[in-house]
Amino acid sequence: MTHYKTNLRDIEFNLFEANDGAEYYGSGEFSQVDPATARHILREVERLAVNEFAASFEDADRNPPVFENHEVELPESLKASLAAFFEGGWDKLAYPVELGGFGAPPSLRWAAQELLVGANPSAYFYVSGGLMGLVLHLVGTDEQRERFVKPMIENRWGGTMVLTEPDAGSDVGAGTTKAIHVEGDVYHLEGVKRFITSGEQDFSDNIIHLVLARPEGARPGTKGLSMFIVPKFLINEDGSLGERNGVFATNVEKKMGLKASTTCELSFGATDTPAVGYLVGGVHDGIRQMFHVIESARMLIGTKSIATLSTGYLNALEFANERVQSADLTQATDKTAPRVEIIKHPNVRRLLMLQKSHVEGMRALLYFTAWVQDQKVRFPEDDGWDALDDLLLPLVKGYSSEKAYELLAQSLQVFGGSGFLQDYPIEQYIRDAKIDTLYEGTTGIQGLDLFFRKIIRDQGRTVTKLAERVLELVKGGSDEFAAERELLGTALEHTQGQIGALVGYAMASQTDPTELYKAGLHTNHLLESLSEVVIGWLLIRHAEIASAALEAGNEKDRSYYEGKIASAKFFARNILPSIEHRRRLAETETGWLMDLPPESF
Image 1 (cartoon, rainbow, N blue to C red):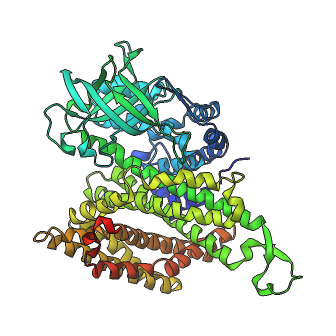
Image 2: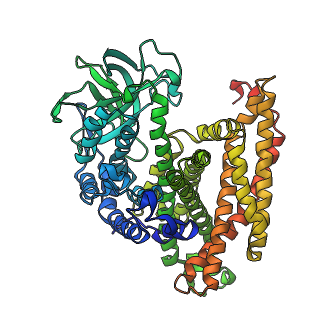
Image 3: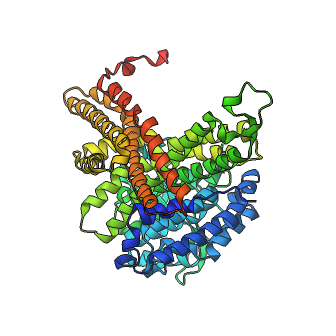
C-alpha cells in the first residue's frame, strides 16, 4: 500500500480553471501538448508516482545508500523506482522538442514534478539531473551541446550543481576552489565542495558536475567565478566513456532525513589524477550561468515542500475520518454517549483546515508562478514576466518551505501518538522536509533577496504591479466574499506599510549604515506578509470560480468547490490579520537587538 496521496483534482483546477491553460495549451510554443494530452500526461505521471516511484520511499530511508572507496551503491528498490521513471520516457517531459522532448509548458512540467517529488523526493533528486543538460543546452557551446547534452539525454546520465564549500557555506563568493588553465577551454580544478546532492551514485553510467570555481588571477567575489563541466568519466572523441576524472566523493553526509539522497563532499584534483573541467560557453560568466540552475532548484524545493504537506494533510484527513475516539463535545459529560470520528471534534477540524488552506494556497502560488513562466515563453519580448517570476520565486521557496515544515507537525498532531511511529509516513515527511528551509538559500537569504534585490533594486515597480492585481479583486470581487475582500485589502495596506518602513531604513542607511540592521531584522516578516497577501488573493479568486461553478449547477464537484470556498474564508479570517502586527513591529523597530552583546544571548 502506497504512502502517497495526491490531489490531482486541485492541480487540474489550478492549471485549467484558475489559470487559463486551456486557452493556450496546444497552440504556439506549446502546440505539441493540448489540454487533453496534458490531462492524460498527468494521469499517467500520477499512476507512476503513486505506485513504482513511491514504492522505494520507506525502504530506501531504512536501508540507505552505502558509501565505500569513493563509490556509492544505491538500494535496489530505489534503482527500480528510477528505472520506472526513465522507462516511461518521463525524463523527456522537461526537454524542448529540438532535444527530443515533449515541448510541454512550464506549468505542466511543474505539475508533473509536484506529483513525483511528493511521492519520493530522494528518488526525484537523482532524475532531476536533467536540469543540468537543459542549462548546458542554453549556455554551452555547440561542441559542448554535442559532447555532453546529447549523451546526458540519450544515456540517462546524472547531473549536479556544485557550489557550496565547507568554509564558505551560503557565501558562494567566498569559495576558494581554483581553476588552473591548461589550454583552450580546458582547466584543472582543485578544491573541496560540500553538500552536493547526487554527487555520487551507481545508477547512471556517468555524472556531469557543473562546478563554480575561480580561475587563477580572477577577481574576488561571485563575479570572479566561472562555471565548468566536470564529468565523472572523461569522454572519448567517439563519444564512449574514457578514463576516470579526478573528482571523487570523499564523504557522504549522515543526515536527519532524505537519507536515500546522497549528499556528498566532492574533492577535485586531490589525487594524481587531475580534475579536468571545461569552461561553460567558453566565457567567464559563472554566477549568471549557474543562476539558471539555482532558480529552477529553488522552485523545485518549494514544489517539494508543498507536495509533502499535501500528502501529509491527506494522510491526516484519512486518519481523522477513520479514527473513533471520545464523544462529541456537546455530549462530553455523558459517559454513555457514542464515540465519534475525531474529524467531528472542533480542534481537529481547526488543525485540518489550517493545513488545507495553506497547502491549497501555496499550490495556488506555485501554479500562478508557473503560469507566469508560461507567459515568459509566449511573450519573450515583455520583460515584465521575467520580473514577476523573479519576485515570486522567494515566496514559493521561502514561505512554502517554512510553512510546510511547521504544518506537517500539525499533520502529525492529528494522528496523536500514532503519528510519532514509523507505522505512518508523517515522521519521515517531517524529517525529509526540514532541509527545504535550508538548502538553495536559507529562508533568511530568501527574505534578503526579496527585499534588496526584488523590491529595492527593482525600485518597487514589480511589487507595485502585483499589488494592483490584488487591489483589482479587493475593489471588484463578488459580494459573496465582501468580508474576505475587505480583510485582503487591509492586509495589502499593512504589507505596503511594512515595505515602506523597510525602504525608509534602507534610504536612511546612506548616511547611517547601521539603519540597514533595522531592515534586516524584518525581511523574513516581509516575506511572510507578501506571501500571505498573494495567497489570500489567489484563494479568494479560486473561491469566486468555485462559487460560479456551483451556481452553474456543477453537482459532481460540489464537495470540492465548497472546500475551495472554505479554504479562502479560513485563510482570510485566520491568517491575514496577523500581517498588521508585523507592520507595527517594522514601523517601531529601534535596532536594539543589534546592540546586545553576544555574551548576553
